[in-house]
Picture 1: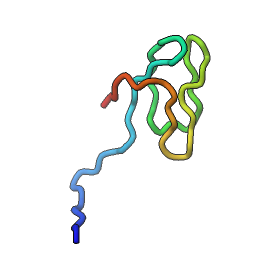
Picture 2 (picture 1 turned 90 degrees about the vertical axis):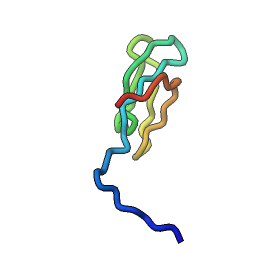
Picture 3 (picture 1 turned 180 degrees about the vertical axis):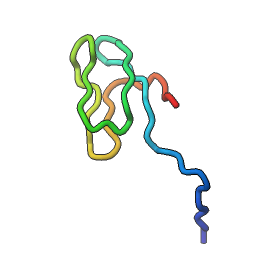
Picture 4 (picture 1 turned 90 degrees about the horizontal axis):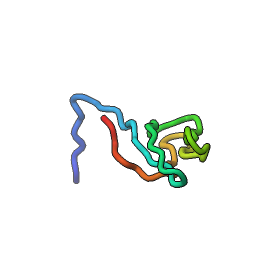
Length: 66
């Protein structure tokens, strides 16, 4: 049986993510648990679809910010 250990200092599971638009290549910073649809600033393509918890990200993830 595996014992669960209590985390002494809890950290949030949500992060800011730098993504690249699949159409124009523009990079944009979005929140991983976005509650509002995010569109590309240059071409208007929807990059993030909210899903109640973690958002669905359409673009390519460039890097995860702290």
